[in-house]
Amino acid sequence: MADNRNPFYDIIQEPLFTESGIPVGKVGLINTETRDVVGVVSPGYQVIPNKAVADLFSEAFQGMNVRSTVDHLDATTKRWKRLIRLDTDATTFDITGKGDITQIQVEIFNGYDGRTAYGFDISAMRLVCTNGMVAKDRDLLSERYVHFNNNADLLLESFKTKFQNFGSTIETWSRWAKEDYTAIEFQNFVDSLPFVTEKMGEYLRDNYRESTTQYKEEPTKWAAFNALTYAATHKTKARKGSNLFSNRNNFLTKVSNMFYETDGKRALLSR
Image 1: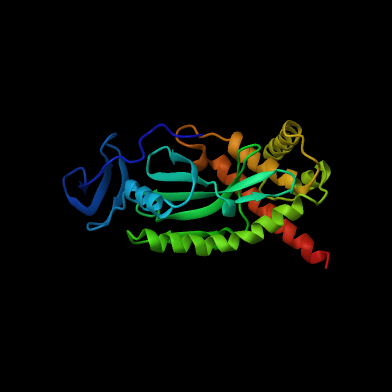
Image 2: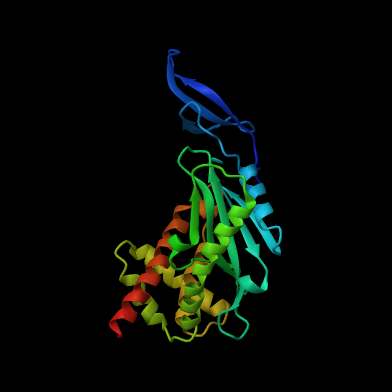
């Protein structure tokens, strides 16, 4: 769900004191629009504005066809993410060979909580259902920066280097699209996860039935994986702020990652 709040609000720094007026040696980062404290940091902390990060990525990607950008803020406005979908031949993939198209989606992020670095993650969007996909080997597709370097050329080179690692994810998805995987196998996978409660297990199975029915999916592993990303994209929400920061979304990302791990174990056992 897109966020209508302004992610590019100004930040000011103000020293913090105890109730009796004693300085505590920290400064508060203040959202000038809401007057909320969004972070507590040490004096001299370098604030990296969301706008500076957005502008840097816009410059880096100016030679690409950016199909869409969508901004997201958490409930407190401390953390921001922007989803950028790239619509080029090099960033578009037909997973099944029959028109099931995914496109690269770059998630850029920044935070004012004093702990969140800025950077990017590479994932994808499946166009038929607009599912935001969870990529394989996410550590190989991510970059985080502690200090701001306003160099778009270096950022683009970093993106291109990371993007080269995305091929293994496409290969996995294409293989899954040909691999039979029944509803019972999906249920067995869900039941094997020790952190999934009975209630959440039923939630996952319900979304499997809804997703595969709505999109007329064949019983493949690709369809089962998309049932998880369907739930994360369309069936999560936060009490306040974007669903990208919700506990439910984090839970579904964890389950999706476990789906990859199970696949690896099965492949190992079959050798």
